Image (cartoon, rainbow, N blue to C red; front, side, top):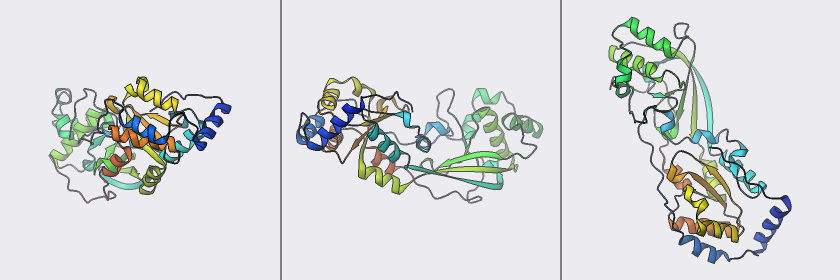
Length: 307
């Protein structure tokens, strides 16, 4: 989610801002809106999260919590700073410690699939040829496998877990190494009815309703394909109207690789945002509002069973 910041001399930045406030740009807001609405780019809708055991298969909104300022680029430093502040209010995190959790309730893994396939359950992953090689057919095999993933399992060391409201009720192990061993051990424990209790530290990520509303009040937050930044019509409009903006590289989807933030309080930027939405640019705020918002996870309210 990193991009190289674009620089502009401070004096030029102040001139651009002053000209915007006085309406001295090359096109009127109405003209900007009309031109933007006719821009032809390969806009693609933002995809819904698919059921997957891998944390990074879903939208990685947790990155907004610790988003570095250098991740945003744009012509005016002050605008980037305000956009950064708005984005870091989108997601809040809370940490809780539990003295005991049955690991059979864990059904997600950190990282992402090595073979790029989607696995909805641990059992689906355990059925792959790579996992079958682990050969868990006894309790001794189970201990060997789970201690590969959790070397301090027998010492009852706490396990780190995470959960995100937009990813449903799934609980993810934070580890990214030996994912197959962990998944196979838990699938075996479910199959054999083995309790596997450990203390845990759970990090809970949740979309913040007030932060989302504030972003919607202040910005058009739209996703743009990478081709936009080499498109003559779009770049011509952006530069000719001297529109201040902030952009962030998303990296999750080649068709929606950039998040573009346009300040609604600036007439030219507001007109560009409205026009791009009419042209088909996906609205990030609407997408976030439509994501699932589960209630907080409570220990013991889900049945544990083999799928």
